[in-house]
Amino acid sequence: MVSAMAATPRHGARVRVMIVDDSAVVRGLTKRWLESEPSIEIVSVCTDGQRAVQEIAKIKPDVVILDVEMPVMDGLTALPQLHRLAPHARIIMASTLTREGAATTLRALSLGAADYIAKPEATSLGGAGEYQRELVEKIKALGGAAQSASSPAPRRPVAQLARQPASMSASRPFRPRILVIASSTGGPQALQNFLPEVARSVDLPILIVQHMPKTFTTILAEKLSKICGRPCIEPQSGDPIRKGVIYLAPGDFHMRVAKSATGMEVIQLDQGPAVNFCRPAADPLFSTAVDRFGGAILGVVLTGMGHDGRDGAGLIQKAGGRVIVQDEASSVVWGMPGAVAMAGFANEIKPIPELSRLAIKMMNGDVK
Image (cartoon, rainbow, N blue to C red; front, side, top):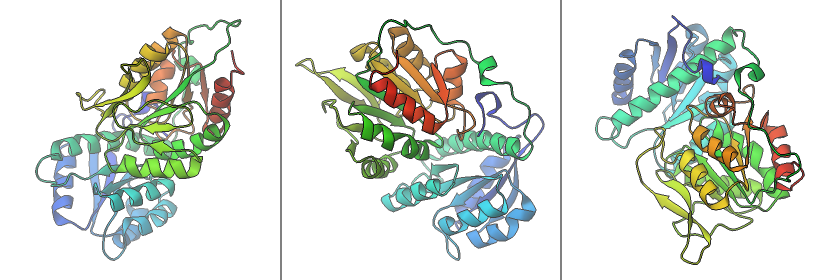
């Protein structure tokens, strides 16, 4: 994990990167892009997973960019071996925006990959600039985590970092009508650990923003439906918000809460400008949920880079709702939850199992 205060490599330390891809074009472009970053050092370029397995113990990279589909040894086969040989290294799966690629990538995340990146449809044309920006951001954040894991630096307790959350009335029971969740890097696995117990215990509507592209969110929704025992859908604009349903923002669309002509709370999707460099983003969901549900909201912020969800969490708190966040130790990147905590907007900071149990108590009205 890497904290919000350590989301970049340590001072003077360059992030050591291994590139593993069978495409000469992709290898060349990626190498050229990353070599322009002063804080990144390319230490190895491999054409397949087998070469990476042979080299990784000697090279000791902080971050591995691992292609999913390769001859000789593919990324999914190489992944556990790379983990065994270099346990501190953070592995980013590089995948195409296909259904098969998305499914394989989610499988890799469940096997321990730290993150993923969706390759642009034409690496040398449109989308390459955004791909480069996103890749550099992920490498810097995960590289800082890898360096911390290999030689941990002293950290102050969270209690010293965070301002105290707004005080709550002890006499007024908290009874949320909706659960809203934000997650990013490490989020797919965090959601799979957090949601099943919650979904089995309460029937309130659950609205989720996970920073993911299209197709990936479709596969994730199917996975969550299966493990939660209740429908998880990518909604359409105008869909009513109902109990017993999990709504996952579809890739490339902001998901907001709106009011229908009959006064019912409904989903609204749009492709407005990215918020916090993200679409979907959590802040539009959180802020519009407050507009419709007031303080009857429980917000949850799970592992992820950046600070998306922080401003929305502040609005939830101001309206009288509650916000709970994943702790640093169990987060892949403690950016989003850390930003909420340090702004003083987190009522509780817990690891996933405790966070699930606390959410259930809050949603059942057992916590004031």
